[in-house]
Length: 90
Image 1 (cartoon, one colour):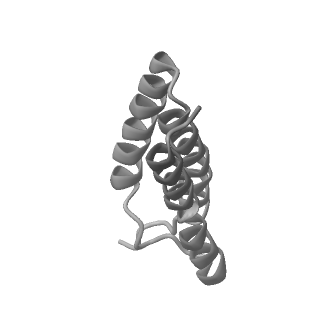
Image 2 (cartoon, helix red, strand yellow):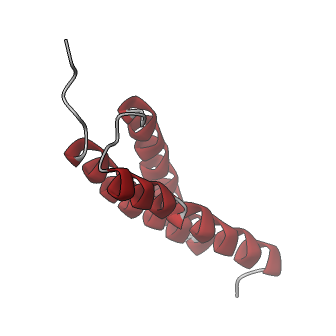
C-alpha cells in the first residue's frame, strides 16, 4: 500500500511532469523555439532517466511513475523544440 505522502508526492510529480505541455503549446503558437535551451532540456532528460531507473530498481512507483511521465513528455518537448528551431541568421 502506498503511503499518503508518497501518493501526494507522486501526484504532484505527475503534474510537474506534464507542465512542459504548456511550453510545447507556446512553441506551437509562436512557431518558434528560439528562446528554449536545448542544453537545459538534455540535463533534465538525464535526470529524469536516472530517477526513473532508480524508482524502477527500488520498485517504488512514487518515483518511477512521475519520472517516466516526465521523461516521455521531455522527449516530446525536445522533438518539438528541435522541429521549431529557426536557423541562425549570420
